[in-house]
Structure formats: C-alpha cells, structure tokens
Image 1 (spheres, rainbow, N blue to C red):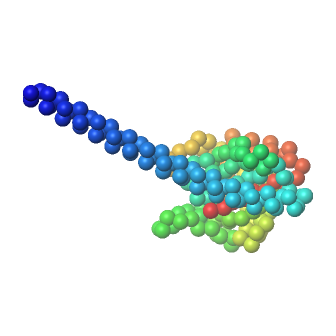
Image 2 (image 1 turned 45 degrees about the horizontal axis):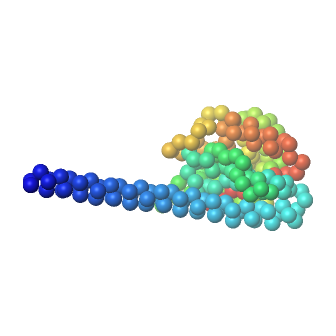
Image 3 (image 1 turned 120 degrees about the vertical axis):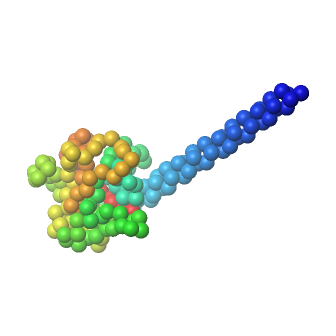
Amino acid sequence: MRRIIFALILIGTLLLSLTISSKSLGNTTSTISESDNSIEEKLLKHVNIIKDLVRTNPNYNNEIAFFIDMEIMSGKNRFFIYDLKNDKIIDQGLVAQGFGSRIDPEGKLKFSNENNSLCTSLGKYSVGNSYYGQYGKAYKLYGLDATNNNAEVRNIVLHKNQKLPYEEQDKPIGYSFGCPMVNDIYYSRIEKIIDNSKRNIVLYIYY
C-alpha cells in the first residue's frame, strides 16, 4: 500500500514539473517573438518612409536601401540591406556606433549632429562617392534631415574596420568617431551593391 501511495506521489510530482517547464518555455518563446515582431514593425515603418522618398526622387535607388536600427545592441546584426521591390531583408551585419553615443546611466543612447561630438546622427543619408582614407575605401554620406545635415562637415562616412568582429556576440563591439563602421567581410558585400548602383542608395539610421 505504501509503495502504491509513494508511486502516485512521484508520478504527480513529475507531471507538475513538466507542466511548469512547458509554461516557462512557452513564455520564453512568446517574449522572443514579440521582440522580433517589434523590430520588424519598426523596420517596415521606416521602409515605407524610404519608399515614399525614392518614388518621388529619381536620384535615389528605388530597389535597394540600407537601414540601421540603433535600438539593437551593437553586438547583434542591425545593419539591414533591404530589397524595396520584394519587401525583404537580403543581408545583415554588425555596425559600430559613435563613441559619443555610448549608453548613458538611464540606459539610453545619445545622438548628436554637432561637430566633434563623436556621436551617431539619426536620419536619412544619401550614400555618395567613394574615396580612400584611413581605413581604405569609404563612402561619403550626405545628411538629408535636420538631425544629420552636418554629416559632410563632420566627415561622417561609411567605412570598414577589419578589427571589428563579423559574427554576432553578446557584448557591444568597438566604437567609431560617429561613422557607421562595419567589418571588412560585410563591407565587401555592401561595397558591391553601392558600386553597381546607378543611383545613390539611401541609408536610414533610426532609434
């Protein structure tokens, strides 16, 4: 009799633990899904803004655009190459932010359009001609908004740095002087797209 009671208690305990475990896994999946949905919704919102811009301005590429979500930690992919015609991300990678845009005590990033701020500036950019500088081939960026119209004066450019990691990681990567800076492997793919484009590609940095 005692053995039967003990067996029933053991079975009940196992069933209870499986139920709790199942609920925990379900909540984790839900949280991740909601986070991904939030990132995607924000991206699509900015994609629509760029679609409106390139539809009315023949100077810009209406098939491809670049997007950087500054709310995503720099150790995770947040530089998205987007196919405007087929509405899909075709490539993504890590990108460093300005040294002045480090997280403040309240957990937020700082952005600035001021010279010598070393900050990332939010807004839309036109990717201009290439030149060779400290990090090799780079592309000039021209700010299209009031929040980044000092980009040319500040020498804000899209450039590579081979010291930056290529794979995602759980900690922030290095900092730039305010420029969007990527690993040289990912940069080589970006470079091909820019060089093969007959029109200027728009880069949108948002938060």
